[in-house]
Length: 395
Length: 65
Ligand code: HEM
Ligand code: SF4
Image (cartoon, rainbow over all chains, first blue to last red; front, top):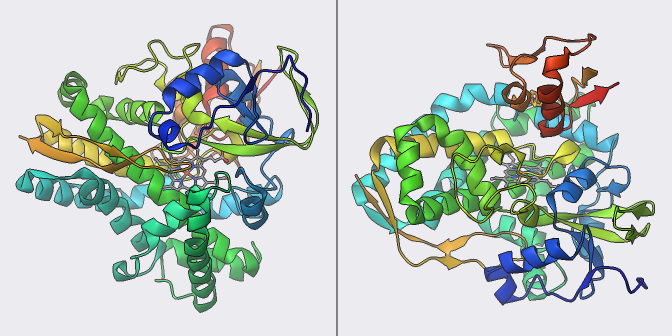
């Protein structure tokens, strides 16, 4: 594709190790270049400013998800047709089937259970004092929760984190990380197909409700494995990242932790601020379906792909004052795009919040100071998150 | 100015209530109550009304007029 020379262009490699480990200077540079920037290395447009990303998310006819939301055609071919990779009206039908189990109202019945599990975990960690917050806190909680709610025994969840990680890696370009994930993903698809066939799901579970939606004719049987996957794949790595980043951010900003302890009603805003600042999923793509002109005169051509960088939009200095600071009292924090926005806005955000709020409440009730050691960040195509975080809780 | 609620899309996240507490309420059942269904939004509520439409995370609210 040829692009006019006046077009904002960048040859930055958002997927190099260096850039993955420290992405924020690159995001700032992209925001500075224009409302949309041509990424010459990957032959896609990128949006890094809040206003444009928001507007694109709310114009789903021009910016379509129906042919997949990854960077490479290889992945897009296989992901098209799922909830995240579809357009209305198909999308709305699939979304309703998953969504009605994940609304804040539907989640109320699980609230006591989640709070109790949070209490048990936090008490155990306080008792231990020092631990690695990634496996022992951030991974442990969602992994013990989501598969159980979906309806199968905890001892069958061994591969889940590897599957989720491979799934998100594959959204990137066809690099080493994506390629090494494909065989892992094959295992996931086989597992989901098998589960959809055996229907070996506890009665009264989310999975059993999906089976009922198939049996009543609300969705085709061929969609069952995709819908089961919607509960597993996007729900783990993202939540794990957010929970570990919360520990890391509060460890480095003790005065913010003191504020939360003094007024636990700040926890809702504090979790929003965590995912604003360390956005777990950096972004997803859309296909441009018709030529679209931006205010600076740049035209996004029909047929091109557009990478919406939620992580960059969330630090846009046009919207957030002192955007790199962690501030649990930030007045407009709810405007972040960490869960996307609009018709594809994360359907699991109520569950993610339920888990995170429960854990932060239990921590705030017991822990005076969170001490963190040297953090190791993951080298991942999509997920921004910690690989290891030595942590000590002081009561 | 009017607001329409797409009940199929609304998932009860309650962000609209935070943005415009005079217009929206999540009731005890967890359902959204909109106080101005089919009615003009009063002048002094226009700013919060616009805000609620912009911040609904799943695009369930629309401004009309
Ligand atoms: C902190 C945790 C989470 C983050 C940061 C997150 C992030 C996101 C984002 C950014 C999107 C939008 C994708 C797009 O624009 O194309 C999304 C969609 C989605 N998320 Fe999440 N997510 C989280 C937790 C969850 C959980 C717990 C679940 C499931 C139980 C889940 C299931 C989904 C599904 C199924 C979609 C597709 C929705 C649609 O296309 O209508 N997510 N998520
Ligand atoms: S913010 Fe949107 S989804 Fe949430 S209750 Fe209001 S209208 Fe419904």
